[in-house]
Image 1: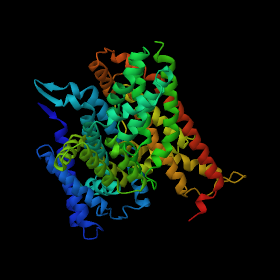
Image 2 (image 1 turned 90 degrees about the vertical axis):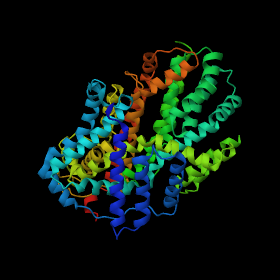
Image 3 (image 1 turned 180 degrees about the vertical axis):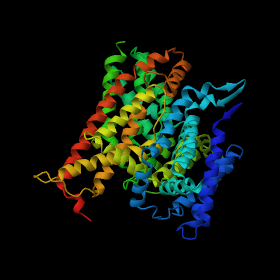
Image 4 (image 1 turned 30 degrees about the vertical axis):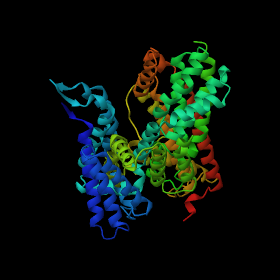
Length: 320
Length: 245
C-alpha cells in the first residue's frame, strides 16, 4: 500500500479543475463561458476517472477538446486583479514570510526524495516509490498552498480563484504536452522511427568513423525535434544508427556513445515546439507575446551544445 | 516513407499557424490511417497515451493555486525588493546562478524548480528587478544626482529576459540530469543497451555526461552575458525609461 501515489494527486488536480469549470460556468461575464466550462470539465473527468474510462471514450473526449480549442471557445476573462499598489503594500507587510511557502516546494521535494520515501509502517509506505520525484513535487505543492493560506490569511477560495486565472492564461496549451506524448506513441506504434533511421543510415557514407558520429548525434537531435521527446528517439536512433555503425562497424565505446547521444537528443528538445511542456507552456506561463520566443532564445545554446557533443564523441568514443 | 506523413502534417500545420492541438490530432489520425489502423483504434490510442501522460500536466496544474495566491499577496514584488539589495546583481547573473543551482541539485538527484514553481514567481521578478537597476544606473545624470526610479522596463527587454529565464531552467534541468547520480535517463540508456546484450555500468554513463554539462553551463554563461550587454544597450537607448508613460 502506498498512502500518497499519483492517483491521489490526479484526484486533487481533478477537483481543482472541477472548481475552475464551475466558476467559469457561473461567470456570466466570461467571454467563452460555456466552451471554457466544458473544456475544463471534460479535462477534470480525465483526471478524476481517466484510468477507469475506456481509452476510446477518452479519445472522443479529446476530439471535443480539440474542437473547442480550434473554434476559439476556450478563452480567458480579462480580470484586473489586485493593483500593483496593493501587492506592494502586502509585500511590505508580509516581507520574507512570503518566501516560506514558495521555498517549501523545493524543500518538500528534497525531503520527499531523501527521507519520506523511506517512511513505512510494515507494508504501508508514505510515498509511491515508483514515482518518488513527481509525488514529492505534488506533495510540496499541496503543503505550500496550506502554508500560503496560513501566511497570507487569505480566504480558502483565493488559491482556486488565482489558480483558475493563471490556468486560463495558459489556456488549452496546458494539455498540449499530453497530446504530443500521445502523437509520439502513435508514431512509435506505426514504426516511424525505423523509417527515419533507415533513411539517415542509407543517405550518408557511414564507412567514415566521423560520419557515423555525425549521423548519430544529428539523428538523435532531428528525431527528437520530430517526436518532441529524446527518450522516444533514443532507442530508435541508437538501434538504427548508433549500434550498427559506431559500435559494431567502428568499434566505438557504447557507454560514451549512448550518454552523449542522449544529450544530443536534448539539444533537439531545446529546438522544437513539439516539446511543448519545456518550450510552449512556459511561453504562455511567462506571458510572452511570441510563443516561440523560448525556442528562439535556445537556438544558439542548442547548436553550440550539439557541436560540442559531436566533437567530444568523435575524440572519445573510439579511444576509451 | 508514407508513414512520415504525420511529420509533414505537423510541419505544415505549424508553418500555417493552425491551432496546435488540431495539428497534432490530425497528424496522429493521418499516421494511424496510413498504417492501417481504424479510426476508433486511433482514438483509443490517443485516449490511452493521454491518460498515461497525465503526470506531465499534473505538476504544473497543482503548482498554479499556490503561485497565484502568493503573487496576489506580493511575492514577485518582494523578490524584486530583495534582489535590489544585491548591488552586483544583473539579469544575466541571476539567470546563470539559477542554472547552476538547478544543474547541481538535479545532478544530486533532487528535482527542485520548474517553470511554474520557480521561474514565474521568483526567477523572472528577480532578473527583471536586476535589469531595472541597470536602467536606473544608465538614467543617472553626470552629476550623480538620483532621478525618479519608479519607471517600467521597456516591453522588449522584459520579453527577452523572460525567454532567457525559461531557457536557463531548461538548460539546468536537461544538462545536470545525467551526471554524478544515475537518474531516469541513465537507467533508460542502460536498459536499451542491455536489451542488445551490452552490459554497461550506469556510473560510466553518468561520468560521460559531465563534459557536456560543463559546456552547457559555459554556453549559458555566454548567453547570460549577451543578455546583460543587450540590457545595457537598451538602457542607453532609452535612459529616461521612467519618463515614458
